[in-house]
Length: 283
Image (cartoon, helix red, strand yellow):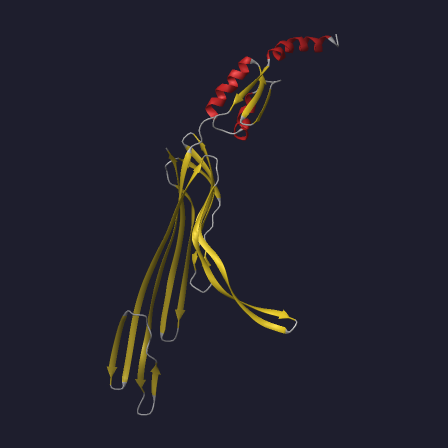
């Protein structure tokens, strides 16, 4: 009885293994590496599937081979051509305001109090005089705004890797003290720092939806020598083809206050950044 059960199982499985035959299936559009992971789950127990030279080598029953070829027809399709657009924006707003008093007040013939004239950057100024006494007061408000935008686009096939970057190289003076056999010497040279805008992306398409691994960057020269304003982002997003997708953004605000004996002022600054993505299918 102990040996009877394995014998029965072998007899039941033998017809299945006997019906399995090998078939070579050529691939038309996709590579073996792209197809194998999606097809292997359809192989029946006891069957084998491998590939080389843009061909699949399948050993399975006739019914299973037909099932796998039907699944392969939905996968082995021409790779879709995509156009990726990335739009990056940076908006800055600033506001400054203040008041200040200046002038001189006479305290008799031999004494006076003098406050130097204010140096307000514009605005309204009122002055009152009476004899040797002169008092001036001023108020100002200044606003500023800047808007920087960068847009890049690149074509890529489905499943491929895309990279694009445009920008400039900033020359920076470099001073070094070099110590040699004859002592220390000052060496001057110029180095270049690359700044630019661009992105790296890997798209995957399923139906009318796209999933991307993307890493955009947005660099601009800073306000001081050698400084650079940078913007970096790395993420994986999913959305529909032909629709703008917001990748992310940031917002910063600062406020300052100044106060003295004869004046007071302050200011505010706001910096907002955003990154958007669009993927379109090309004919």
